[in-house]
Image 1 (tube, one colour):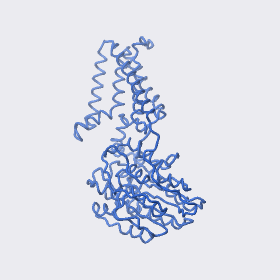
Image 2 (cartoon, helix red, strand yellow):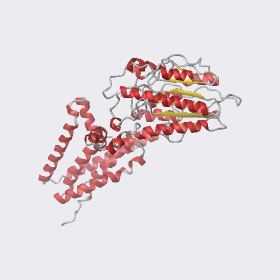
Image 3 (cartoon, one colour):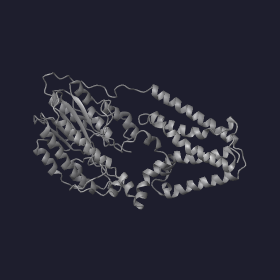
Image 4 (cartoon, helix red, strand yellow):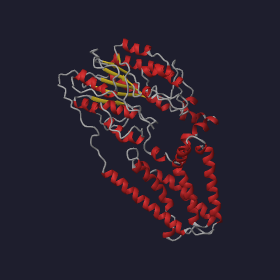
Length: 498
């Protein structure tokens, strides 16, 4: 059999190898705060191998590089850009039949089959089309390289918010340990009463008996975690261009604000150690609690691909239909439950350690956020229910919240009993239950209703008034405990929408 002989260099379909390069480069340029070039490079061999193999196999059938390349190019284009195409169909037809996989996948398969038959019968050289596609991919790569270079040169590494006027503490000032414990997605009493019809007074009463001040009608300023925590730790509203929730904005604005927050920075400047047991980075250290809800790196690059969309949208239905227990357990996201336990253990170990310096300990627990791992009596929820990414059942949420009550009380009891000196404990949530899936819609104001409980060794809670929001929570602490004079901001909230 004759070995494959490539055509002239100018007519060789280089665009086939350039397509994955452009796909990955465009992802890096489009998401500079989510993706690094180092995330993209290892994916190139993974994409090139099937492209080269498929092209060579088709050459053996047709003895024509251009036709073989066009067939592989069409298949690769569907693979790389299926998500964009599918999202466009759903934007036109909503959630109707036009966006159904049962329609889209057979149509795309039929289109590829028709193209294969047409190329098989064709005797055209396709040299001009090959040259055009070669030039087009080179131009697209040059354009994206230029855009990426401009973004890099214009990157602003300065502070995203102006500094606050705060005075340094004298050496003689009392500096108790400060615990910030965030129960992610914990609904405030107003949301629990109005949406769930649930009375949570057993939990809030137990906190009051332990000396906490449970602030009534407390609210978050934003209804998504990164935005809420950035506003809390910086004691300010965020400079958002609009009220749209975007993952990119979370990474571009909120993550840097949390990493270099005003509150933690001021504490460090005044002799505090900062210990991070959370899902975010504080300072230069990476987050110790990795969760599947924050996309970054390769997962962002692969999001538009057919493989990623099938995995996201159909994997659960396939593994449950064919009863694949190992896959169901993988989808159940047990790593979140494990992370909750590890963060609580780290917090308790640190609270019991005698330290010369005062400490700020930030603990972020993904409970009662979904997946809802336990019923209120501690009975594990079956993996099949946990594996469903659309399971936001309010009844299961309420069961998990009551389980979380016991975990949180146990945590604060252990901190209070084991701390070498009386600590400050701030127990709060970042946002409320947001619903989703088949759950009835949650009104916006109830998605902002949060838990806010404060424990001070002094017992003086005069700075915490009913209806306080997160931007004022730490201002109240600094004013009350450390004699700062920060003005209180207007307690308003921004409801972010997808």
